[in-house]
Image (tube, rainbow, N blue to C red; front, side, top):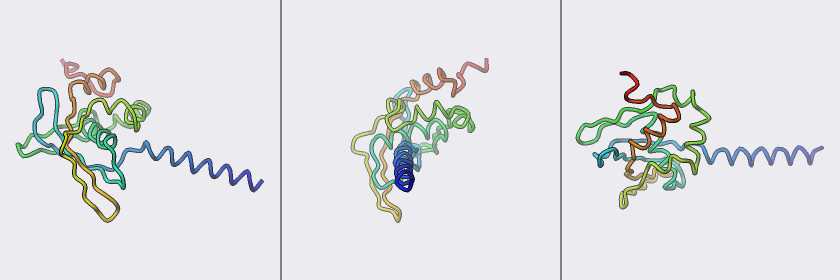
Length: 154
């Protein structure tokens, strides 16, 4: 009996650890200038001990969709694409879309030479400038029903 409980508790810890890897990292997002037509440049900082390009991309796309980003030097501000409740209302889609190797990675690319890494009290603050393909991202989210079409109000 004792051995069974030990094995079950070990399996629970392993499952919890595997689920934590897909959890969205804590991040900050700001505008970083204007990109080409249909894209937006953002500066993203992810707080973790070891941030990867995938973490930066996930945070950038998540920030553009659900938070928006503050203005850059030109004062341009990017509002959030989705409503504040869209993430909880469509939790199944968001969990799959923002998974560690999910489809959200297709819509962001890291600008080379823009990496930064700062040591903090709790680990590292890793950041970079990313280019988000806003047009293609909006089309995907409209198809999934997360974002309303821009022509829906007319």
